[in-house]
Image (cartoon, rainbow, N blue to C red; front, side, top):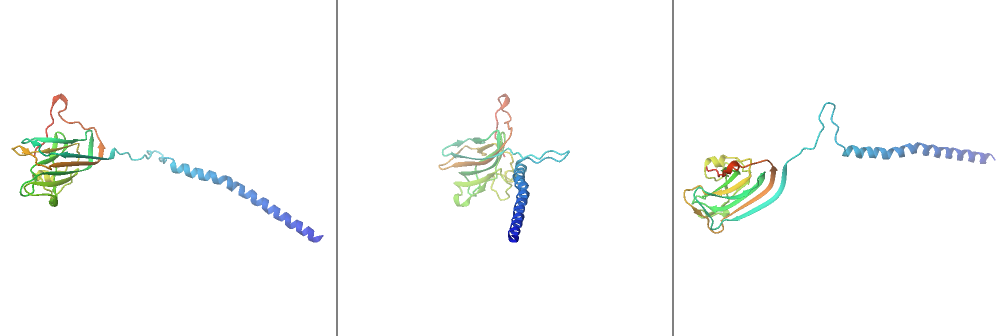
Length: 220
C-alpha cells in the first residue's frame, strides 16, 4: 500500500511539472511570430528622420547605361576646305561614356589630316586623337581613337596644342572636319566608329536653331 502511494505521489509531481512547462512555453511561442514580423517590417521601411531633420531618400541619378554603335564608311566622300560631316547627335542627352575610332588620312609623321570634333553644337572642338601605330600607315591612312569625354592627354596626337590640352565634358555632337584650305576626298576603307555606353539626361539646345540660324562647327 505504501509503495502504491509513493508511485501516485511521483506521478502527481510529474503531471504538475509537465503542466508548468506547457504554461511557460505558450507565451514564448506566441511572441516569436510577432518578433519576426517586426524585423521584416523594419528592413523594408524607410528610415525615419531624426526630429527636425530631413528624411533620407535614395540618391537619384539621370545617367543611363546604353549601348549604341555607329559605323560610318566614308570612302569616296569629299569634305570641302573648312567643311565637316556631322556624324552623331544625342541631343537632348549628353554622352558621359563612349569611344571613337577613326581610320582617316594622315601625313608622313602620322599626324591626322582631319579633325574629329566633339561638343555641343555649335561649340565643337577637335578631340585629342591617340595614334594606334600597328594599324596605321604613315602618309596614307592611320587609325586613331579617343574616349568620350576626352581625357587630358599629354601624349595625344592632335591638330594643335589647344586641342591636345582641351577637355570636353559635355558632348551631344560628333563630326569629322577638314581644317585645310583644299578639298579632301577620303580613300577606300576610311571609317569612323562611334560607341556610346552611357548618356545623361539634360536640356540641351543648339544655339542658332531659333530664328533660322545655322550651327557651325568650331575650327581650331
